[in-house]
Image (cartoon, rainbow, N blue to C red; front, side, top):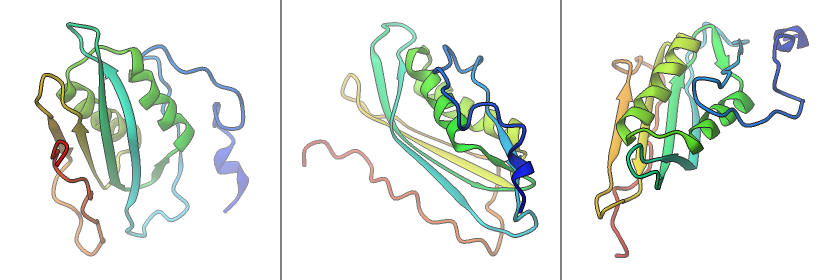
Length: 154
């Protein structure tokens, strides 16, 4: 593996402002040095935030993103900035969760991807949103997302 697979990255190793919106966010990718080897990658964002598009009130979620890379890996700082760009973005839980999954699929063309959005209650109702690209590939261990359903204080 050589350093030149990282030469086109524009955000890693430099101060980078949080994008103002998901549309402005730049998701960067690098060639997968283990392309052709089946393995799963997991990112967890336990403090994801967005805004209700009608009230402007904050919404909070625990996101779990699993993917089986093809030729590309997502660069993690760009993913962090992309997720952070939702902080001032108004959209329903379903739209946020699925939009993140679709944007990653568009950028990476992974072998397989799933995202679980475990949203904290607002108005007394938690909403969990799930998206995946299809059946998980055979022969690759993909663990349970490990997030329990909302139980309140009990």
